[in-house]
Amino acid sequence: MVIRVLLIAILFILSLFTASSASATIILDSVGTVKAGDDYATNVFSDSWDMSNGEDVWPVYTNINSPSFSGGTFRGVAANSDPQVYFLWGGYPNSIASPRDGNINPVNA
Image 1 (tube, one colour):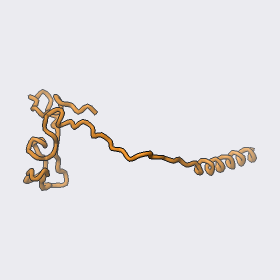
Image 2 (image 1 turned 90 degrees about the vertical axis):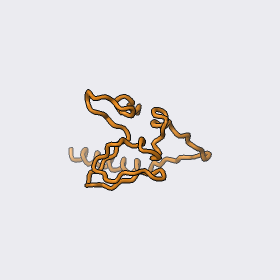
Image 3 (image 1 turned 135 degrees about the vertical axis):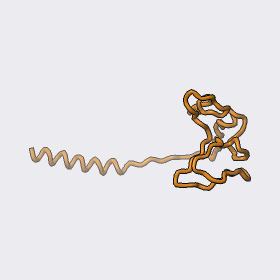
Image 4 (image 1 turned 45 degrees about the horizontal axis):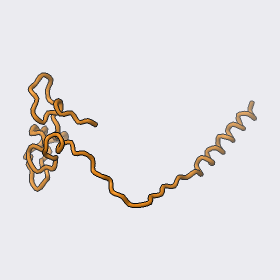
């Protein structure tokens, strides 16, 4: 029984060495360009999320002071350690949906 356990242990150790010596080679024949995917905000709202206007972010900010848009950048000062910005609002149950409500415009991911 001891010999059998010893033999199994030796075979196991040898299998580790043979498995680690394997390698893979990736060959890229040419440099290519990957086409950009669909832009959700452009397709659904005809307005990309490029931070050029106030509609790019849901206007209810949580724990953010002085929100502003300038030069394609959204800026705000965190009021505490939990600032929150939403691109899509999930809405409240049984409430009237806004045009950019995630409940009526779900992301197909």
